[in-house]
Image 1 (spheres, rainbow, N blue to C red):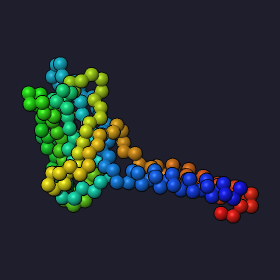
Image 2 (cartoon, rainbow, N blue to C red):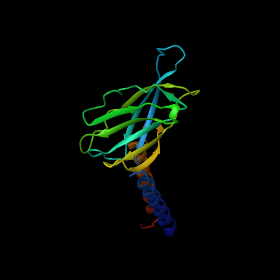
Image 3 (cartoon, rainbow, N blue to C red):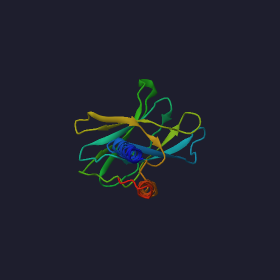
Image 4 (spheres, rainbow, N blue to C red):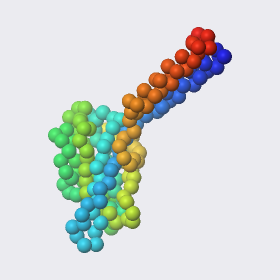
Length: 184
């Protein structure tokens, strides 16, 4: 019986390490879409609001979100102000050059604040709701240091209730072990 409690505790500890270590260094760019009132007949106006987490941006580091030229047009230019830590710009998608558009934000200071959302409106050429997009994080030489896809909704952050539940489970296992006379 003593061995089974140790095995359970070991498996739980390794699982926690994998869960928290696996997400500790990856940049996450999550988005929320808003269907805006259409101002031009025949155009479907939308807005992305991006939240960025999992990376500390120092001066001249930044990220770029790509807008497929077949699905997006008329990116808001200039994009809305974020805060004094960032310089956002957009490049329009160009179907004649088969070139995707970009929303780019470069940090102007070390440890640039990620507290404010990054937003851009655009005309959606696809059907349904706009979705996930590719992104790149770059260094001061504009070399890609990480790439991925945006995710829908808020960034996945462990909630205090989840951690409380895991802690309660550990305490419960220890309590059961003590009742059975097993010393951990």
